[in-house]
Length: 407
Image (cartoon, rainbow, N blue to C red; front, side, top):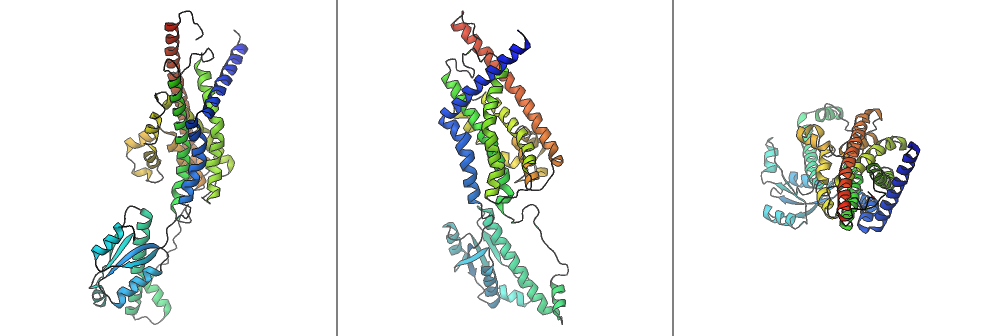
């Protein structure tokens, strides 16, 4: 057989497998949910929840045992801040804890009875802050408000005791060095701009792997020999099988990838510093690596539900291992090695650095190279596994029908 006929047969087999896989995707409600519904709806819900970026008017309860002018001043300044709202007063700490346990308040300010006395004696006053640690954003608002108010009151007392004659001297005594605080790569200082770009990339990988795994589980349950490869003469070579399946998934997730990386950030005003061409150079290797990674993982899926138990469990660890929500330098070396097995590690880093931090393509080129290496390795792994499945399917066909030579 000539090279032309081999290429023609390869193209026909690939197109046939692509068409069969595409039909299976749109006939299977479970796969369709992971391929279409979840990538479309889940990012919108998640981004909408965190669209305000920061929390304001967090309710707190005050236990004022001092009942002095200075304690009332502290309470008024806290209540005047945009982040905290003094919603309740309690007689003692036990009553305040009861309000927090019922979720009526998120924190407690306890002002001791000697608060004013210690300050008037030029001693250090103490205000105890109790926070509900289940929400980091509310903890940050309550604690930072108390710190800011205490520094402001301390500056006012320092001015009164300094004996200055001009306002300029008062300013210098309070703040000898002017500090201009600028939040890098996150102008709003919010949770959404910091974490959600990484979450969007993780959703792209997880939904892709979940859908591929569920499709493979369905194929195993339907085939009479319980294998991935059906008893069909067109499934006679490894490369058309892997290529046809990958082409099907790539066509779907080319649209989903553009939606998640370009449309959703613009809808919710997340940082968008990269152009479409730069994002395309990241998405192509990322989706390719994720597809072959998903095909490789799907080979160990015997039932539809198995892949959900496997991939949903690792979603949160993968977010931490990417180095976005936890510093990459603080991740132990062994766990960093584990993170290199997943395309999301390098895909998230490249996307966040280019789109949120303004890095050039040359600066994320190492991550892109790693993703291409992953794509090549997982392509080889997928071919090896499907080659094994072909041999098993062929032996099964020969054992049931010795005259059947279709495989």
